Image 1 (cartoon, rainbow, N blue to C red):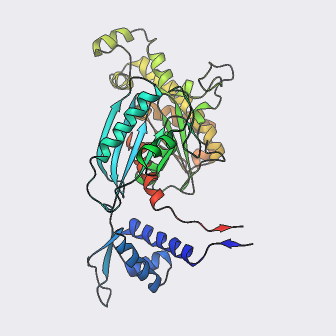
Image 2: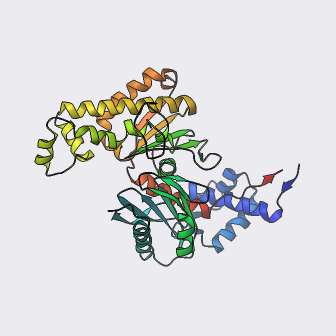
Image 3: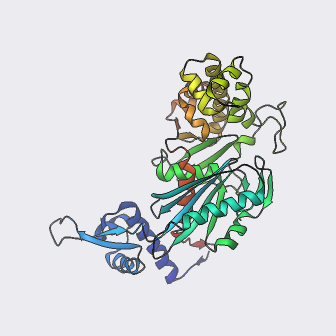
Length: 399
């Protein structure tokens, strides 16, 4: 067995470990960095000096003394650079500019009126360029762009298929790298949302978590031991296209009876149109089509037909969650996406269904929550992935 790597490689690994400790625990002293990392005093001191020279770390005033000389406190320089996080949806591009700790500095939103590849790409470029123009002077500028995309993405950032946008075999990452000349990372939007929840949301304290994004479709992001699970080809998380009804309606993906046709926003709105008084409710609200905002409002006003629709959709969501829980055994399931605004009207039917169908898991510390980050789960997750590329831990290869 041979281990590839040399002294330089080991040093780079240790530097990344030290930087990560400062990022996560600042304000922090050199002595505490030693305790957290297990590295000796001399190694930490040398690596901190390099990080100071590279502007990723700076020193601030003295800390509390534990009996001897007061320690110099280290801080992570989150303004050393910036990241851009994008959530590209069917009808909207949401994007944020963040510092290196994921704090949002600027944001913009661009409506999409067509699924034309060229039109969407131009709007995506303009959105990114608009945020880049908002950056201030920094040592590293924009270090990367992360994008959550509603489709199947391979490890090279190619859109293999995006049924809701009708895109197929689009080399999106290559196109963006050509235009911006900085690192680009593109994942399925649900996977990116899982990253956002792990870094900034309800998943902070969970090692094994399942994030389910429910909009017009359904996507899932899987965290195993705090790591985003991609699968062999990078296609993991397409739970919305698992079979719910073998005799169901055809799906854009080529399958029939996909889960998302029974548990997403689309079937909910479709069924709402059939309610006896929906035309009257739309007229009263000044809308031509029902949307989630209207349905939540009607449920709050006591509309029994709408409440029953939410209950039915909740049951269908719960059936899918039960299947996933039995396979993955997470400690936490987070429901995000547009459907999360209806938490009050969904949670009972979801939890009751999971209790019935996966009782062993539910009774042993399984928690089902709705995202508190809303749409920010994806944009923050995308920015986080872009930042992580900058601070990616070097790995030693063992053959």
